[in-house]
Image (tube, rainbow, N blue to C red; front, side, top):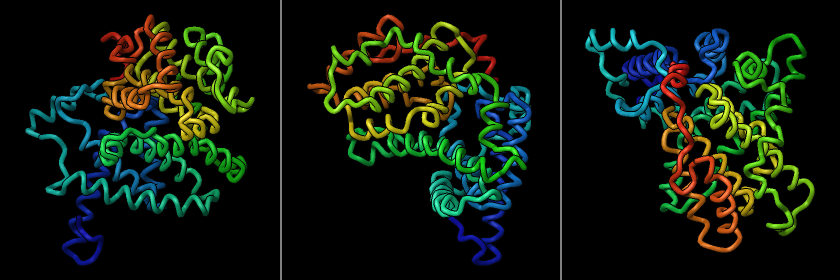
Length: 369
């Protein structure tokens, strides 16, 4: 990896590398975000995020990092239902343009370099949250959360194939809500919050309609998971019950959207990526404690990811996480809990024990293009 600005030669190499990464972000990566069909959101990423990045280096490095990760993960043979313009790809082939590269720099090395910088700088900036850097921090949080999710397989491999729940991703995404709530008073109505813009102007679902997002009626297929008498849990207080119920209601809404409403993949993606920010933080604590019911509920959420398996961010993660949780179910209460999910989801075809969520039709997939 070139040392930034150490000398003229390295300065030129670094500048060209970062230009490649920036171009890849605006021309490719930004179109893969779930709300990119909305012009105002596409402008947010392609124009305003870049401008903010020039002012706040942690955001610019997060952009460089996700661009490198996209080059690594978006393989030619992998499914693609989010390409913005098939004509542009055809033109690229006519011109003899190959898969995007970084001019001899290993994308994995570039990703590690810029991600390390971004995370360190983001942490420092968060400790100094103010009106000026709040929107840059929110956008950086979104980009880093995508990367935390996509990096989960490497984390598992580094732990000698011993599965651990995705705590880093859950904590990071849940922290977006806390950051948003802290930043809004700082803006004092003088500027829009990037978090509110993404939520409100990004299209369906309507995040203002919490009654619909957390509709208890959607949970009917999975009520066994919150049957406290049939499946008792030690130290189960009211806060834990509410956390389990609210989380299950949100996941069940995703299940209904996929299996009954057959909504577009982009909308399902928005529901999935909003899981961490919207669920109670106490549920994440329960997962961290490896409570059987919490692990099983998390497995149910991960099963829903199969509905957008064609997207580079989520590709292959449903199986990995569900089977990872299954590896913890050799017996006892956790094993009984997974049996609940297996029984409850079998009629719906959700991915548990190799079953998969019914895929959207080709017509629906085209809505992602």
